[in-house]
Amino acid sequence: MKYFYIILFICSITIAKGQLVQSGVYNFYEGLSKGLIKAIATDNIGFVWIATDEGLIRLDGKSSIFFKDELPGRFAKGFLKRKDKPLLVVHDYGVTEIISRPDTTYFRKLITGGTVDTDEQLFFPKTLYEGKNQTLWIGELQSIVRFKDGKIKKYRFPQSIDSGNIYSIYRSFSMIEDDTGRL
Image (cartoon, rainbow, N blue to C red; front, side):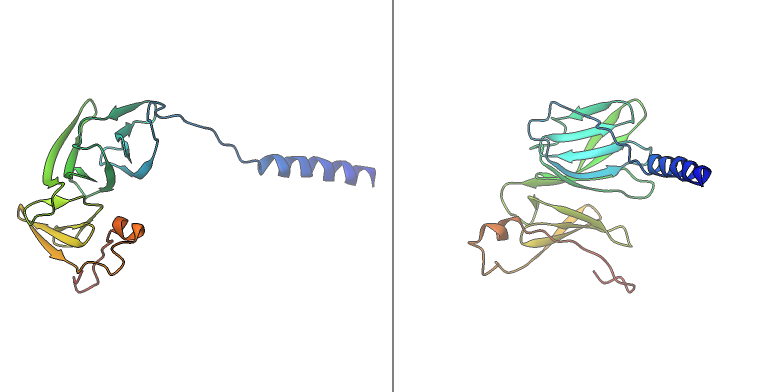
């Protein structure tokens, strides 16, 4: 009986030790004034990208690079990863391609945005979706925008009855297609 308790004691220590959760803190960039993370994505070569209200952060697993001035307005909202194409980032003033290379990164504006809601430019876009035919759809405050063949077309929704409500200001749209290709 004494050996039974010794074996039971050894097994309980082994089981308890195996169930310990190990974690750590990785301070990827301590210079962010707000540290608000809006989205995280990986590009086609494996870099991890973080969208914040202060700009973009690129992680390679060992170090980080902070891109503060590469986006107009700095307010990154989200990403769209596309197969065999550059990662897209949506921000307050449009949509930009992130062209990653192992030793450098390029940013190329794809769609322009501004502070005035017009039919020619985006107006504080929030979300991105790529349809089955490679058409880009962008969610704005009161509209959805189609970007195809280098041109945008806005589909506007009526102003909300609650337009005086603070929460109606921050609305955005998420999109998906059904099996027939309808958005």
